Length: 311
Image 1 (cartoon, rainbow, N blue to C red):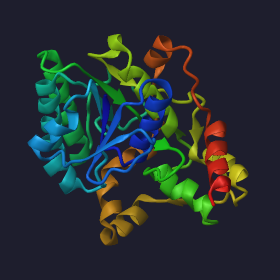
Image 2 (image 1 turned 45 degrees about the vertical axis):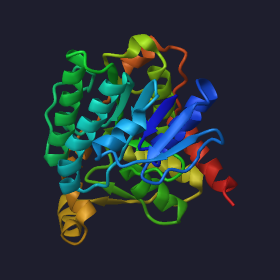
Image 3 (image 1 turned 90 degrees about the vertical axis):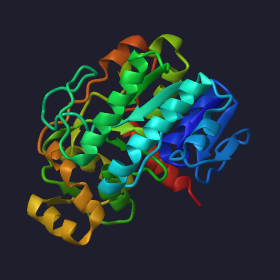
């Protein structure tokens, strides 16, 4: 049995598809209100903020994938992430269950320096600090031998379905609906974006590779990085839309933040859009040279095909 904790998001959904296709049909989907992805999935409603329910979520599982995504609410992150991580670590330790944590890059410096698994944490803002803290908690538990685990880290993502990312929300969804895309701060910095099915497929592979545990892994991205100017031009060609877009300045985002908490809570992430984002996934690519990374053109074409096929 392999359990997906936080199975209702796009990463969890695609992880369930990858596990069923390549590794196992014994999959437990855990969330507050789970629904089946595969016909053979086992469903368990649970609140991981409750230690007893976290323990029940991993009962009988060989591997648990923590793919929970909290809303972009700083107070919620600070209040809930440490509890959630502690409960999951304790549950996996008690039940001898391996843990695969799907992580983001909020704890990294928001500069143009290349980011590798060895990059020192330099979080900017409360969300970055809490992500750094919970990763350190997990790394400490691993070092102490309490739990067999790994960290799977991904940069900002884009992809099909209901994918929660700034790129999907401000660019892809805008083009889908005939609206003008919006870009934060600059359109000429290189972006590292991961295609969500690639992230889930790579995480399933790592979770089922015994010697991958005890490490941090950067999940694989297309290294032919694009600026948002180039990405929008490519996406507009795919979706048949207008390639014109708006670059939102910092003062405009501050003004929007006065009226919108989500925009205000995302403010600490803005520096990353002012510099090239060079997320390096060479370690994974050396270990798994047969893994086919989806190019930006292929990813956008698949999103377009999904839209056309949707009734």
